Image (cartoon, rainbow, N blue to C red; front, side):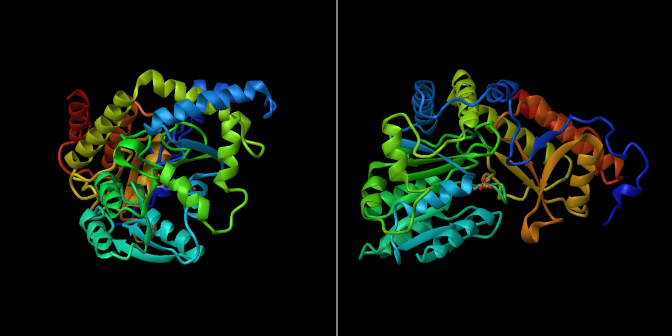
Length: 399
Ligand SMILES: *Cc1c(COP(=O)(O)O)cnc(C)c1O
């Protein structure tokens, strides 16, 4: 069904009020005022004691967030820089790797690995389904020659709203003994527990515009001792993303190049906020928002795209039937100035995605569900009882 939003009479006319944009996409995510204010200072010298103090503090905060005593290094770039750095610092030309692929970001891992001449064996799952840990266990168990050097996967697959079972897959990697685990935790870190040390993860990549409640621009790579051992004989080309340089500088509370200084101000403020809330409370909030979003959608007869029980705490993908997802998404933006994400590749028009990651409160979730409900009603596409979506979401938030 095709509905032309522009042809619709008010109240679907473009929102007259400016500056009320609410981001409910899986990055960039909303930024708290305290973080914005922290950034709006003059930069300071990056070789100054003041800056060193910030590096020292934020490093400890980052270790807290990653639940690790390993190095967590900060580079200037988006999340993909962290992913690329993760690969090129621990692997060598022709190395065999297993790559999990159940969505757009899994595909990206395969492309990065292939770009560096790695021998990539792809382990796939259908979009909307989680990766099967058993596939990884079997492939690793069959590798008696220990040729597999790394297992690379995405924890929270943002394109489909699926969370993969990183803990179990990482345990199979540890049982193999040789392979390293390299994980894209860009939309899981800060949304659910990613205990690097307890799960025995070797490389974790993330980016500032997701769970960190910051603007884009900083990328983070955590490296285990085993990852550093592999670094010692990795021969893939690297210069700006050579993590050895970052490690050496970090030991002197510094950064090898001119860092994005104002983003460090933001990082310190954001991590302070996270510490004040506490990890368990942060994870509980994301779980609650996932439950409320899912309940709201289902009560409106809007099917979830991710397989039941495997929805990401950061993002909910919705696959409406008989409704063009793009039309609905654009109407929500036009009428309520709430930005939802569309579907990628073959999901365009079939799926819309609600980001509930980072600086998101119960009110935001309730508002998004209500806006979707009111938009469906306005388009004459609401099935069932109007208000059922909001009621279900409110009940989930209360419970
Ligand atoms: C956002 C995102 C990335 C990083 O993308 P950038 O645009 O480079 O920041 C990587 N993986 C996942 C799962 C993401 O959601």
